[in-house]
Each structure stands twice: as structure tokens, then as C-alpha cells.
Amino acid sequence: MRVLVTGASGLLGAATANAIASRGHEVVVFQRRASGLPYDEVRGDITDVEALTRAMVGVQAVVHLAAKVSITGVVAEFERVNIEGTQLAIQVAKAAGAERFVYVSSPSVAHSGAPIIGDGALPADQFAARGAYARTKASAELLALASESPDFAVVAIRPHLVWGPGDEQLIGRIVTRARAGRLFLIDHGVALIDTTYIDNAVSALVAAVERATDPTVRGRALVVTNGEPRTVAELLTRITRAAGLSAPDRSVPFAAAYGAGRVAERIWQVSDSQPPLTGFLAEQLATAHWFDQRQTRLSLNWAPAVSLDEGFQRLTDWYQLSNS
Image 1 (tube, one colour):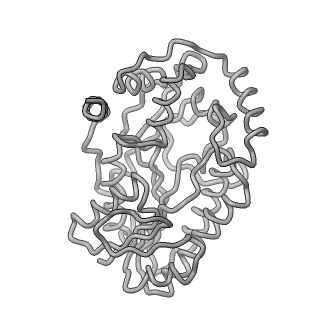
Image 2 (cartoon, rainbow, N blue to C red):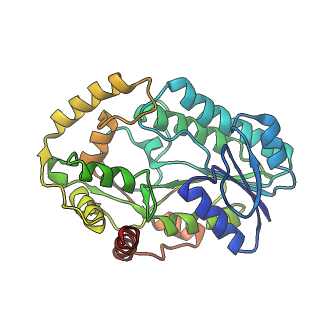
């Protein structure tokens, strides 16, 4: 197939493009800045219909990763990129004759603040989801799944907390805060959460592309994780130690952290810089959220190949090499 990957300048997008190419497919990438990848490339904003149309020529499948990913920011910009951009990508893909559309979503689209304990992919809820990112991703997921038709197979994949060497979204921020002495636990970090090593998220997306037309896949939302829940305290400890830093030893009560986070949200609400904490982040660090992976593995005929232990060893090796 000829496969378009949007948002290919990010860690997950670039790795997905490479993995799709390694399976023998022809890859096209689309993003705002040069990706540095050895594939056909079209640069442009996700709401630029002319650029998208050029990128979609001859494409049979689309992996849509392009999104505004931030915990604060102007709501209208989230709506423009995440909702309008997705809607336009679907319209152009259909007009170009694409047959498969893999929408890369997030478990946050179904998180309303209550613990998630062994659930599958709960329905996306653009009203109950926390924050502009989650709400707009929920709206976009619903749009994508609603566009499913006999000749246009759609699947939404929700990778949860993707991390790995070179990741700046999760690992980089944790390490930066640890180095600055600003990393702490909330309620002692006892909440049990799932994460996803980068290689496993990538292989799940490749499986989604190749199996999108299967009746057990098309029209569905599937959460992807390593299937190895760990406490927040253990995860932060292993990340900081991989970077050669001390583990966090301070804990803040949830109520205090949540209150401080809500204040920070108001201060940073029109800024693209990241606040030290938000109410949503406090909830994520204090609330259990781990998922039943049986349906995902069965539908995609997929299983994670890299365990958390191996992933943390790879992260340690990467930091040691980077610091040598």
C-alpha cells in the first residue's frame, strides 16, 4: 500500500513511518517542518487543504497522528488542529480514494476523573473529558469513527503514555523536573497506571493499518498499552534512575496538588509554555488508570514485544551513551 503518515516529525510518527516502510509499503509523510525521513514528503498545516490534497495522491491508507498536544493553550487552536484538521484529513482521504484511516487517539478521551481499573476502550466523551486536548481529541475520534463506511475502514488507536529513548513529551519533562528538584509524588505515588513502550505503540499502529478492514477492527476504538501496570512511584523512580538521577522523595496530598494545578491552568491558559502542574495532570498522577488489553490483542493479532523491564534498560543505555 501507499500509506500517508501525518505528524511524522514527532517521535511516534517518525518511528511509525519507518516501521510501515519496513513492511514493504510505500510511505508518504506530512507535517509542518522537515522530518528528515527518506520518504516522499509534503509539508504544510493539517488544515491546508491544498497541501493535504497533494499528500493524499495515490494513497490507500492514512495514519493520522498530527495534533496539537499540550496540557494548556488557546482552546480555538486545539479545535482548529485536532477537530477541523481531522475532519479535513478524512474528507481529503475519501476524495483521494483512500480505503483505510487509522486515527491516533488517546485514552484521555474517555477519562472523566474516575479511576479506570481493567476497562477496555470506554466511549469517547467530548463533554466529560478533562482539558482542551482531551475534549478535542474525543470530538475528533467520534468524527473519525462516524466516517466509517463499506469502502472506508476507520479504526481509532489509543496508545497510553508512550515513552522511550529520545522522548521529550513524557521522559524529557520528567527528567528536566527531576534535575531542577521539582519532581514530586502525589499521594505517595500509589496509583497504578499503564504505559506503552514506543516500539509496542508503533507495532500496534502498523497492525491497525494492515488489519483495518477486518470486521473485528474497523469502526472500533482500541486502547494500546504494555499491559504491565505499575505504580506512579515505581515509574518515576525507574525513569529518573535511568537518567542517573535520584528518585523523587517528596509527596504532596492530592487536594493541594489539584488546587495548585487549577490555579496554574488559569495563569497559563493562553500560553504555549507548559505550567509546572495542572488539575488534569494531578488527577492523572493520583488516579488509577490501567486497561484490559485482551480485545486489542485479539483484534489486531498483536502483542507487545518489548517489556517494561527491557524498555527501562534501553532507556538507561541511551542516557549512558548520551552522557558519555
